Length: 450
Image (cartoon, rainbow, N blue to C red):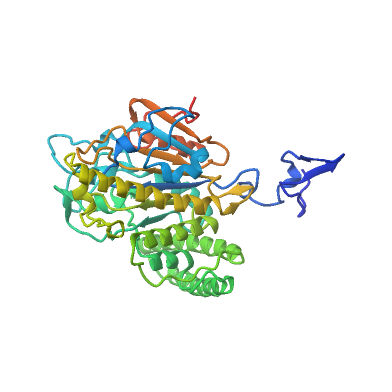
């Protein structure tokens, strides 16, 4: 292959005799010196994880038929436009969320703590929290090498609650899905302005000129810090030099990210002003956060995101749906048909919001397809029956084409006892991320639906 700065568009056609024939992928279609992962030859894979608490109304969620002929149940109906890129996965368990050694309650805390880790959390109200490294952070360690942010963690409810949230379990287990290490939770952010500033710094909008000015300022400050640190290094003893060397390594990583930002600063993005506050309704709040999430993917600021629709044991009141009872209280409906109807209304509301996110992903071009074509998005809950705190046969969806590796449009039922973490092992494998295991994983899943 001869390296030049010229290349053929992927959609090049041979024309003649009144017909048009698409060419196969040729070496000349790969831009010279461009990273293969950013071309048609190897699209960037995005991973996303969506969590809903308190279980789901399973008889209105689970299709009766398996395979390609499954019906869109009432809760799945808002996702009908994405049926061809959607897999309904039944039979997956998080048995690590079950109580052990007589520890009793705490199912909600365990449901969120195990959702992305597959590890049973240590029951404690103190600082000695321990669970496991979550799948998003395993992915972030690898995919974060190519982006400014390793991952993005979003929520709709505040996660600043402290103390014990669920019968002797620290609020840390309910406040986040994401764990950088078994003892280091990653905070979720529910304020749109803070998310925007994390993505674009102290800019007022996504305007390229503002972004370049902010990047240049950050670079100047970093240059000064680097020079001063190098001068100080010559004056210190061995122990302090070691500490300062670690500090310099962190600075070099920041320099790498600033260089990435400089390369991306001319990228055209949709006009988006810095948000001022949290919108008044849950729907407006969710859509704004979804827009920021899509923007983060689109600008390749990160390739890994996690989203909490609500905290475990959420007391959220969905007044915009005409509901005045708390969400968690309703989930313990004791088979009261009036309460079940209200929970169902919330379940459908959540999938309707998720459909908005999927539509934004599908309508955003990315290489030869869309962001959704090149993503693998998990949606589900750490409980199936919220009334009885059931951690098996969980409600799980997988949406997105996985850059051509996943064929949707199927309902797949796995054998009883299949760990949810087997799905995570499968996704990591398709994203090209090596790992020895995730929590209680015991292998990988067949996603073919046949």
